[in-house]
Amino acid sequence: MSSDSTRWGALHLIDVHAHIGSFRGYDLSTETLIDNINRFGIRLALISNIDGAHLPGKTLDLDEKTANQITLETVRKYPDKLRGLAWSRPTDSKGSPANLEPYL
Image (cartoon, rainbow, N blue to C red; front, side):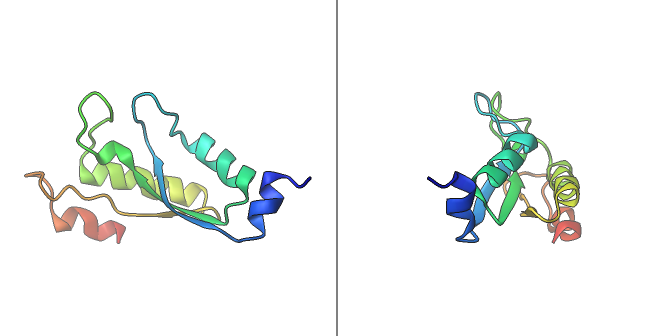
């Protein structure tokens, strides 16, 4: 029987919806994400930082700049495995296209 990595890796899958950050009750650590990418042979994962979500008590509720900077730093650490997706907060009074432009 083949391993998960061999079986799924042959498909060159791209995970288009992955998160880093924290969400109460779930392990969304970068280490766990990378372990799963390797385990299942995922070619690439597109990530966003769920800590940019305004979910009091469940996430860190980071502003756009901070959430996206963490994503950028994570992608730079794993350039062969990850690509970043910008996180925006359009209903936040402090949200702004200028906050996102450096990450596009």
